Length: 77
Image (cartoon, rainbow, N blue to C red):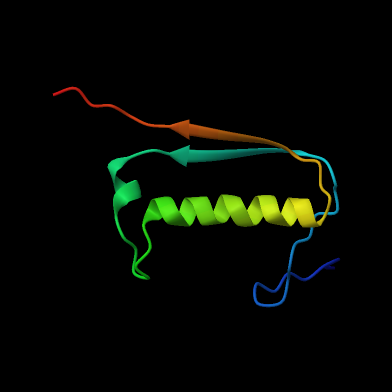
């Protein structure tokens, strides 16, 4: 017997916490300066995501602890 049905087209997960820890990992690489199919740089998309996330937290008066981690790799020839 099922207790819940999850339909990908209709199910929406909602979190009701006003305070949590969020870790956002951003890889800094040469691909960040490539364009996607919509004409945006990957760097611009990352900044737009962060801006919209912080605006949403501000609008909802959330007090999340957000850690943004920038990491990259370096290859020696």
